[in-house]
Length: 329
Image (cartoon, rainbow, N blue to C red; front, side, top):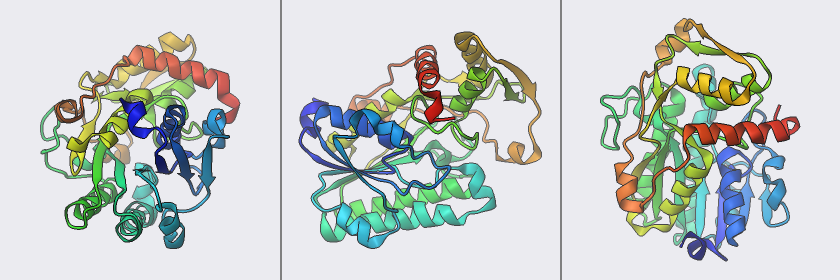
């Protein structure tokens, strides 16, 4: 069914050489879609040409910034679907420099939606936001009606981008789907720093036979979601009319704590170790506590639910990075 929807369709993926964008590109190219990837390749954000090595002859790469109005105006032309994955994705960076969040997440989204309004109002836009838009959980599991009290500019900028898209959907008729993604892990994520992608960073430390730092008592809960399940959720949401104009969680309703994740990674990798560490004052202030998603809405509207257990996903991720370490370290 997914294959029939996207086959021979013209697709734009912003942030297309990054973790989620490239994973979407591979799946869409395999389906038979005509895929264009837009990526500014800003250092540290995760863009990596090796991510699309297996499909490099089947996709078009455009090295442009989401804030370049003229470029975006051209890129949206004739596209049936636009998967909007570009943006500043680092919570830590936003604490010291909020301006990239405003530039890429807010201004970039406004430029994209205005381009669609003017030049391709028939396109459907699917946005990958973050569970951080909620801030500390008022109750668990957290559903889409929960209060949004984000703790950082990164999360605020994503919430703002989501609201911009909702306006263009409701007022200007540019069909949009707004997704709030949880802690995604798996192959093709950047592995050069620990500023985002905590589970993948744990995996790098284990592969390098280093010590994983587990903060506090390690009992903080997260719903870690494997990239393949995330891609399936995004594609199913994009093809389903019931998702248009909706905000939906993409997560896992079976959370695990950081200690459990660290122990599992060390066990599967058969290298590295873990130890408890104290929170820094800054990290303690920014830590939202337990978080896991209520995914009943996306199950009902789209029919999606995750399939990959944490053990299976960690195994696949370790295997991938051990094979392709030179392209990510």
